[in-house]
Image (spheres, rainbow, N blue to C red):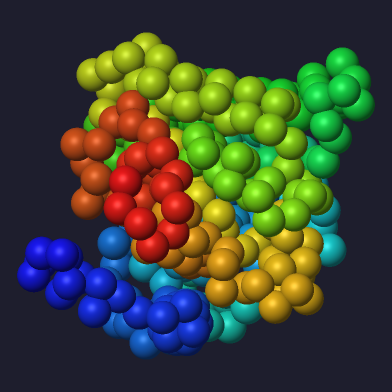
Length: 322
């Protein structure tokens, strides 16, 4: 055994140590907004975010992060209006300088998307960011999957992103020198998926809310929309990118986490990626902030994996080298 290998093996943490470290690290990440100074990365920007309703979701975390970074006006949409009033009051109480408009809307309804883009232009004279985050997933196996169910997933997950690109880009082309927008431009962000995540999830439990065929097909379409539309919008300074999350604890994946915790195997969740852990919504929100801000001004047409390294290689047996 080489000295280098012995050193690596000695430094490797036990499963219990790694799990304890992971929990501490995730708590630190989830309290990030309470412990960081507002840098103003989105100062003056008008933003639309869909799919903000889940209390543990990526959309909600992104709305709070965008507010923390000084967005001028947030237009927040969800099909289920239950948690929208609480989200609005939370943002307004914590960030009184940020305007918040919430609305119940179907992200795949063209009239609704046209309306919110027009409202942003009418009220603020500009649109700078559209985060198309809304999506669904259910558990049907291929043999039980109906045409209607498949097409509804494509509608909610892929059509919603097409509508975001089509109508947000039209709004972003509008200039308004009186509102500080002398040139066209903006950032369109869409939530896709890390390509190996479904294979990984199925190793732990039947996955309520996730289906390999229709969910994967719809998210592959989203990635393609970003790559293609970036070139159809060339020389406009409108950027289109996707975020491809790995295994993130949200309302959609909650049953999987509950099942693992009930079995006492929470420490194994996420073990196949290089970081050896799952992620939380704040980590995706941080990626959305990067893509929404001028920090990513030269990033365009990319499928941005935020998955702990899972898509960097084929899954390997934990504890062994590939």
